[in-house]
Amino acid sequence: MHSMTCANELNLQLESTLKDLPLWSVYVEVKNPVNDLTTIFKQEPLLPGIILTKNQEYVGMISRQRFFEHMSRPYSLSLFATRPIENLINFLQPEVCVISEETPIVEATQLALQRVPQLVYEPILVKTKSGKYQLIDFHQLLLAYSQINVLTLAQLEQVEEQSKITEAGFRTLKHNYTKFVQNEKMAALEQLVAGIAHEINNPVSFIAGNIVYAIAYSQDLLDLVSLYQKYYPEPVAEIQNAIADIELEFLKADFLQLLNSMKAGTERIHEIVLALRNFSRLDESERKIVDIHEGIDSTLLLLQSRLKNQQTGQIITVIKEYDQLPLVECYPGLLNQAFMNILANAIDAIFNNYDCSSLPASSPKYPLIRIRTELIDDKHIIIRIADNGLGIPKNIQKRLFDPFFTTKSVGKGTGLGLSISYQIIVDKHGGQLQCISVVGEGTEFIIKIPVQLDS
Image (cartoon, rainbow, N blue to C red):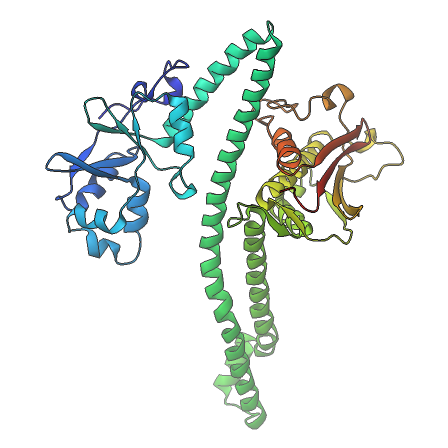
């Protein structure tokens, strides 16, 4: 077992291969009980997976994620814990990505990313020249790929001054790297949202389903108490004291209100879960015909907590002026990400720079975001997202959509949000993204996309 030095600390070169990375060599015979896998994974918290052998011959691999995901299911522990590992492998039949140790890191990363989304974070089996196998953590591979990209960018920057051809290649590399970062962010976001939505929805559905009966049962009991009061108006002293102690009349009036407020709360949580699913469109990776307003509303709901400045108490007012729009053919998850990036920038621009004293007399004296939609020529829609912050100087406006360009302080921004949004709207949807800004008055982003995508 090799020590796990972080890949971003390795001295990698552009031509570095998988054998230059930290690899794991942990083997277990499939005749051993499944409990042995649990023990090893607990002893090595960074271990991505275990290579399985039969009579010291390779037969497969099981990853940490797949193993604990399956063993956490009902009855799996009791069914497999003491049985041979071979039984578990025959049941799961895990898919394994095998790559030669001589494969360049860049090529290996591209091969790994071509896997189906469910397997993209699985460890990779590295086959040595001697026919042995080792494992590499997929995240370590991404870190190595990132370091090589940094080296590539540095070399291209040096050559850029000498050749226009190199400049074009440099821009292409930046474009590809930005798309790579975007894909990684969206993949991570989809997994996170799926987990949150699932974990929240189950208990809330249980509560929502039972609270209806709780309200009905409570009403029946209160009606029964009212009948007793009607036909036995003079109860014994002990019951009268108990009625006084619990304030029965107030309890009868408040109890159902309490249950109804709980019901309203569960409905609100359901709305938030639905907004999460609508925002990421977890099951819609291809083009779909959707309601654009629904995507904007879902994005605003997720940004709701950011509309209030916790330090100053300022609250951003959001005004929505929606036109009657047709359903639009688009990539919903990507388009919602563009809305998220632009709206988040508007919020940051207002709270980081907002100063009532600096605004002209004609401007509203409160933080404001205005969202307008309209249909033009029956073939295109326009979404306008405007804020009344301090605006963007002209010299900065020219670079707004450049990858890695940011005016935020170190650690506050990556410079990829607007660049990714530009690619989503222009490259992916064949639309237009324009920024109009006047210093001292505010900024408006104008999105124009077709109602129907080209074939």
